[in-house]
Length: 305
Image 1 (cartoon, rainbow, N blue to C red):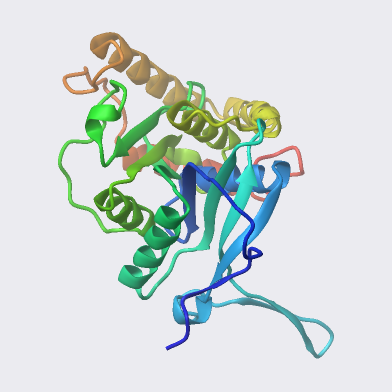
Image 2 (image 1 turned 135 degrees about the vertical axis):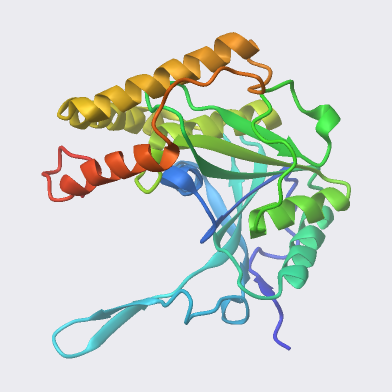
């Protein structure tokens, strides 16, 4: 069987990453929060490729078909998925690992064993997965980031968004579990994204994720580009929502519910919070989805491109 990955870092060059960040494309990532955060890090921090995973043995191409370009009677190029491990340096020069790319379809046990081996062999003591989840919250409030992990006693007090639930697994969650079993402080950060814009870029969520990564790891990470994009994005959403009173009313209702929950719980738990007379999540989503779809062909000043 072919090796699962190829090492690309020159032998003998020492690396000392304390933290492994990971995010996989293909699993749920509302607002593309995790992907935008990864893009920000790769675009702004010095980085070197450490290892490339064999996607031919990990990805089902018929489930996620590669995009091919057909140009004037000929196929000119194909965009193949990647799954890589990069070495980055944060703004203060500290090494960190970034595992990113397509979520594997196959060989989950082997893949997580390989990643765990690489992490342990390089001295990683903390791992953090990032992503976005859709929630019935307004875009006009700060993005809440829920933190979960293999060592709950090391987490800061926070609102309990979920109790005990069973849900379909993702590679991010599976890796969080396996790294924790290996003794690494393995955490996951889930940014709460307004569900009515969950399919669009929401840079505010990505910025919140990177702030949470910094808070949980002590890394110095760049936020400037994301914060600027978040301000522009917020103005665009506000402008579009203002065009339809029904949409504005829904956002206002979500704001009231959000504020009431915070008052009731004092920031520690959402359990027992009052519920307002709101439309159901499906009704809210349907109204706002219809509104956004109606604006798909707007100019560059709109949300839809």
